Image 1 (cartoon, one colour):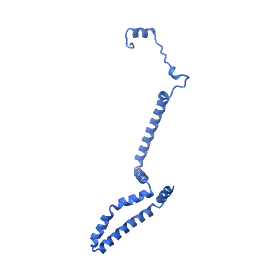
Image 2: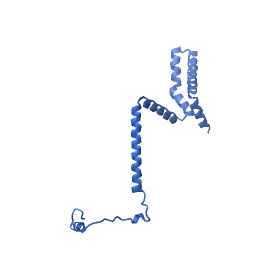
Image 3: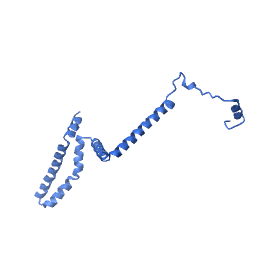
Image 4: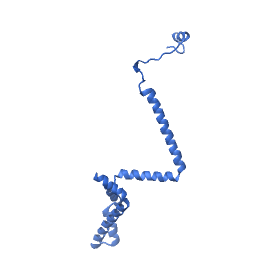
Length: 153
């Protein structure tokens, strides 16, 4: 429950928390740089060395964000917002895409409903396994089959 509350708080205060996190990472870099400068390293070399010592700060910030928000949830949110922005720029394409999806889903549903009713479900009779099909044939059809005609065996 605590994780859920923490993640919801992160969603509400995301910009402020990200800014505080960036400030903290920068603070650690500055402390490292000052320590190197105190040992006699030049300011430029100390700045580059402090960045190398911290490693990939973007990756570190993403790892820290993973505590507050599930990374996959943030990714889904980013993808959805990008998709909405892109569709908003091209409304005709969005309309055609939505229409095609609706038609495909409707067709698929109706075909499955028909297949389910005719093939998958048993017939609404007492003994569906005993149902037989009766054909009406004429004597000429029977002679043709006996002689090996087009409908014969």
